[in-house]
Image 1 (cartoon, rainbow, N blue to C red):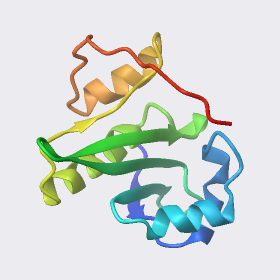
Image 2: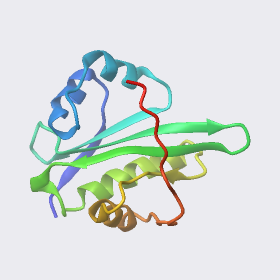
Image 3: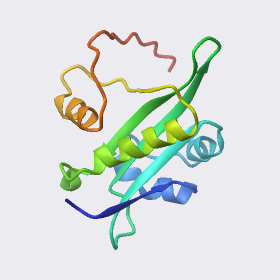
Length: 141
């Protein structure tokens, strides 16, 4: 297993340094908004002795009047050469620990059907697939 550190992103520059891990280019104004919005969290994984992050997890606290607060694991990514070393599991664990610290009653994530790698990662971090969800989407752009 690779030795690594997990740190909370605190600046747009840190987010931009992780751009290679995101699906699209990081937009400065969106990164700044994310980092300053209450209830939004981003953790980065760094191998010991390296400056560039090799993984991230983002989460958003969601609050509902009759349920309280839960953590939505919004996205998880680990660079290909660093996969299968426990980094994804550790990132998920760090977000879950934050959720507990904040008093969230649980955490959840949506994954694409057939994404067995993601499902294995989440299971290894203590998550359970309840097999009951479908995703309905709306495109506004």
